[in-house]
Amino acid sequence: MDTEQGLIVPNVKNVQVRSVVDIAAELNRLQKLGSTGQLSTADLTGGTFTLSNIGSIGGTYAKAVILPPEVAIGALGSIKALPRFNQKGDVYKAQIMNVSWSADHRVIDGATMSRFSNLWKSYLENPASMLLDLK
Image (tube, rainbow, N blue to C red; front, side):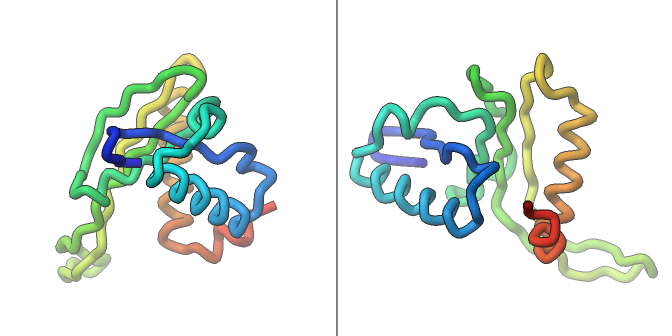
């Protein structure tokens, strides 16, 4: 979160057992506390995977620094309309978001991060498939 006191990184605990609705409620709780400077130490520690919305302030790419116990960070850039080519070679307008991934290679190798990125991209492009994969 970009706050008047600088960047802070609260985190949602135990996302693997939470519903999408529960995660959204927790994000709202953290946002409210963060905007008033009332986040606890527990809210700010123990994260393992961060998504940072650098696009909300106009960012495109980032080179994130990973601090243990974190193992990976994804920096989400702003969405831009850019020309792309379809299978026939025709130009069309596409909505493109650049994502920069950083990972602790002692824990996650680059090939695994690349496969994750491709799966994540497929979920963004087809959200129904993500819902079918939820447990």
